[in-house]
Each structure stands twice: as structure tokens, then as C-alpha cells.
Amino acid sequence: MQELNNSSSESAQQFRNLQTELRERWGGIEDFDSGDCDIIIIPSLSLDQKEMQKVEGVYHYEERHLFSLIRLRNPRTRLIYITSEPLHPMIVDYYLQLLPGIPFSHARDRLLLFSAYDASAKSLTQKILDRPRLMERIRQAARPTKSYMVCYNSTPLERELSVKLGIPLWASDPDLLYWGTKSGSRQIFKECGVPYPDGSELVFNAEELAEATAALWERQPHLQRMVIKLNEGFSGEGNAILDLKPLAGKAPTERAKAIGDHFHNLRFQATGETWENFSSRIPELGAIAEAFIEGEEKFSPSVQGRIVPSGEVEILSTHDQILGGPDGQIFLGCRFPADESYRIALQELGWKVGQNLAKKGALERFGVDFLAVKQSDGKWDMQAIEINLRKGGTTHPFMALKLLTNGRYERSTGLFYSQQGRPKYYVASDNLKKERYRGLLPNDLMDIIADNQLHFDTGTETGSVFHLMGCLSEFGKVGLTSIGNSPQQAEEMYNKVVKVLDRETSY
Image (cartoon, rainbow, N blue to C red):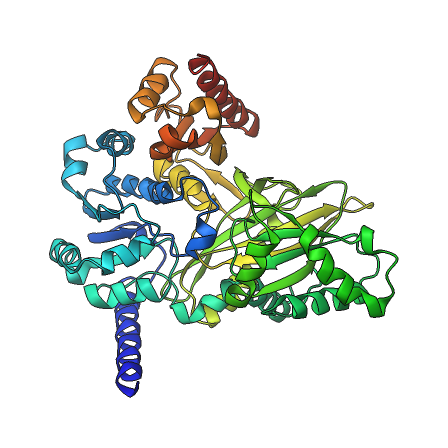
């Protein structure tokens, strides 16, 4: 046991040494977007694999990072991209053809693709670690003093891979993972003075959860509903709604037992979820109860930022999230930017959270989800819901906008401007999904895009770019980002894609 602890401690120190190298090589914000470097893309969703199976076609989500290929617009950048299963060549060609001013062959020569040839329900990073020869090929392909790794989220698996490859990981140390959980987020909001809903402490069994829920109800007797959340759930898939109205007649002393009995009637947000399965995850992942924010005019905005190795915090974007599911808890897509009436306030709250995370040693992407409720005086009540200490569903659409237009985000307005000075807007989704789309191959989608002029036009800097194309044939599901010069134009372009796909699959 002592040897195991020593080995773990040594590995952690090696990881810290590599991150020190990261700080020395790439200190400032601009250093990561230019220069002579090899970027190793590990698009692994290293989250709880049981929870991941709630998302249809989840292993195809490794394709969301393919927007990174647009980084090849820098003629000195090389990309090493690893996936579980080989990518369809047409999908790769699609992204390379989006590059303005770069010969296709030049970009293709600077892209190295590797695959684990493994579609099993394990994280991609674990699959790589299980294949020493694959790791050796990756190690030989990269230039050690000019390389860094990026990933979807950072866990002990990504730390181990970083150490074994000897390549620094641009992401937070996994020791900081707690700050991206539901309970960790609430602690940071408290430290920052950022408003957040009343809720419970973290618990690890159903009995304690019932008691914590009853205590919250005692503090907030006006509540009509509560949200029960698995502490490490994501995209709303680990949430459930507790309706308090059927329990309204219970005396305070009877509430904990009544709530515990009523847990079987929770309205789960993930399709097919049951209390038996949900409750079995509580000892593993933990759970909290949180006040459900009511409101007639209510939106779910989010703010995204990044922390570079120097510790500098940059606000990247704001979005209004598009939510679905039984109670509007499941992330489906987003609109950029967030509503002008609260986007600046949203940025400042996100900035506070970013500064706190930076002091704790966090790196790279973070996002903060909020609820915005319009008050009778016309002002917005902003309540922070959770921190995502990782990339998320808003990362790849914004990356597409930034890399395709080579524009800039202006914090004073909360708008993004192309190089021509035009403000840009988009509507994006990971979940354009219909049964009738099943059976469409990537080749079919390319034909539809070309025949109906749905592609992104580099001249006007408008149009739609697609992702999750590998998900289409089996699950009838595809992602897209529709970019316009106004919110209305972006919406129209998105709706045009839906209309065309519906027409083309009318058989």
C-alpha cells in the first residue's frame, strides 16, 4: 500500500511539473491561439459512464471537438486527434474545407488521426491508456517541447495520460474536480457573493436526502417544487423534480418520512430513469436538494470563460441555453449572445467566479449556468445554478464562430465582431433529432448540404456548420451551428436546415 501511495504521489508531482512547463511555454492568452505547436486533442467524455449512457449516441460526441481542426488555419500548427473509432473520411474533409486561405493538402499533412478501434462504453482516455503501443505512436508523433494536450474534462485518467506521454495538459488538475460539482459550485458562489438558490448540503443516502429536503422546505415554506440533483450529473440528465403540492398537508415533523416515500414519484429528466436506479447512484455520486426557481418570464443564460497558465481570466461568451425535457432541465442547444438586457451583468458574475477558480489553481475552460427571472419592476433576478469546470455544449459552437471568422469578442458590449467589424450571432444545437433522419449517411448529408446551399459561406460569413454527423445514421441525430448577421438571420438559417432535412426525408 505504501508503494502504491508513493507511486501516486510521484505521478501527481510529475503532472505538476508538466503544468509548470505549460506556464513557462505558453503564458498569455494569445500564445495558445498562434505559434508553432502540436496540439493533442483527447475528446474523451471522462464522466460517470452509467450517466453517460443516458445520452443517445454518446460516443459520437467525440466529434464535437472536430472544430479544433479549424486551428490548422495557422500554417505552423499541427493537430493530433484521437478517437474511439475511425472517423469517416468525408467528415474530416468537411472540416478541412472550411479553412479559408489554406490549401487542403497543406492542412491535411498537418493533421494526424489515431483511433483505438474500440466502441465499448469506456472513456476514450481509458482506451488509450489500455493500449501502450498506441500511446507510443502518439508520443513519437508529437514534438515534446512544442506540444500540449487538450481534453473535454480533466480526471485522474487524463492526468495519468499526460504523465505517461510526458506532455502537459491544458486543463485543471483533477484534484480540483470538486469545484465543478453541484455542491462545490454552491460553495464558490457563496465565497464570491454570487446569488444562488437555497439548497441542501451534500448527502450520500436517500434518508439523509429526505431530511435535507424537509429542512429546506422548513426554511422556504413557499416552495412549490424542488430540484433533486445527482452531485456529478451533467446536462440536466441527473436532475429530478419533486412536486411538493401533494405533501402540503403534512406537519413539519412528518415531512421527512413523507418526502422519502414520495421520492418514487419524482419526475426524472432523463428518459427511462427510475427511482430504483437514481437512488442507487446517490451513494456513489452524492446528491443535493435545491429550490426550484419559479417565474413567468424565465431564461437559462450561461457565461463561459477560460483561465490561461498565467492566471489571467478571459470572458469568452454568453449564451441563452435552449432547454428541453419534462421540466426544461435538459440542455439541447444555445443562442449567442445572451439577451442584451442582462448579458453584461452575466459577464461580471462569471468574472467573479473565474477569479475565484483561478486562485484555486484552475485552468482552461469554465462555464457558469444561471437562471434569469424578470421581476415586476422589469429588472432581472440572476441566480447561479452550477459551474462546469470543463468544456460544454456551448464550447464548440463558439469555437466554430471564432475560428471561421477570426474575429473577436468585445467584453464592453458582449458581442462578437468579425474582422470586417460585423456583429455575429448564432443558434446551435447538439440535438436536432428526428426518427425520419435515421439512415442518412454522412455522404447523404453532404449531398443535401451542397444541393440546398446550406454550407457556411466564407464570403458573407454566414451559413450553417454541422457536427455529430457520425450520429445521424443510427440515431437520427445531428448537431449544427447556424451563423448570421442578426439573431433573426441565424434563426432563419437554422429553421431552413430543419425544413430541408424534413423535405429530403419525406419518404
